[in-house]
Length: 117
Image (tube, rainbow, N blue to C red; front, side, top):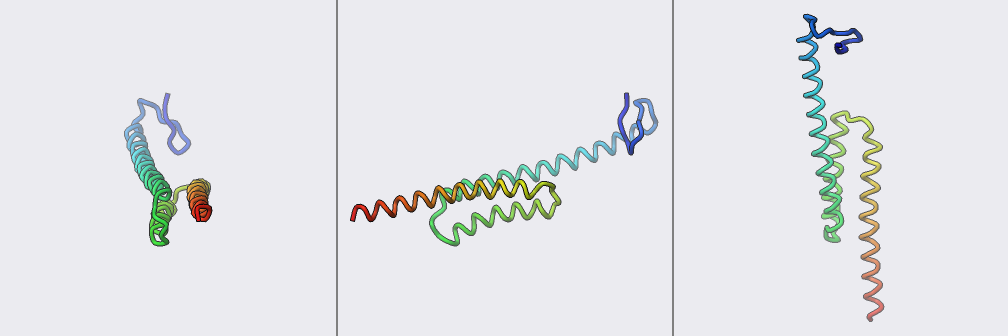
């Protein structure tokens, strides 16, 4: 058996094996780094979306939370992550659901206030 390097096979007993292994190690390390960056961004977005459900009804407070999400998306964009549009679309949907639920709660509370008057 062997591995692939530039379209050619590298045999286990080949003198090219150490350079192939070093290249593989480099690619795996780079991949691990990118996965870590992505996981940290996902965690930050998850926390921000959770915060969006509890933040005070204040324009600056909302803007700060949304800014955290935007910052994470921008960092991933600058790092060249693929399929970012699809992922950010799902993030937008999640944010929309949270904001919609908050709006519904606020309208119900407002409506209830007028019923009691």
